[in-house]
Image (cartoon, rainbow, N blue to C red; front, top):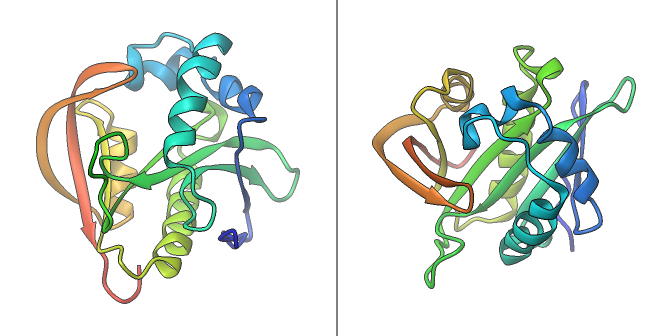
Length: 185
């Protein structure tokens, strides 16, 4: 069974698959969107195919809600961006069973309107309800990314640490925020 993220008054959600490379590519073509991910370099379609899709395949588990959730505006079906959710340490030999990482990437015209917070909360709520073992919701961002840090705070997350974060996009000075999950997310 695939977990469903309930639509809100403004947003609808569906889980991306390896057939949705074009949607991932579309978001990554704005240098401002990419500024706090890789210094502003646009992602090529080849990078989506060779790096992003294989990484998504490592953690995509529809029955747990893990993957990348496409976000669309309900009034006009505009594709806005996506919310990622996966186990912390998904790319290690011991991914977490009780700590999930959440992240988001939205097209610039949709910034500053509460969409990222609304979408991240909806995805997190669905995943937490379906996975009673989840005890923590975590997120990382570059130190300078005030917008994403604001979303983390709106989700009820608290600063944990500043550290050097390494992933497929490189190594950056980052912060980790986390929220302990109670009976209701």
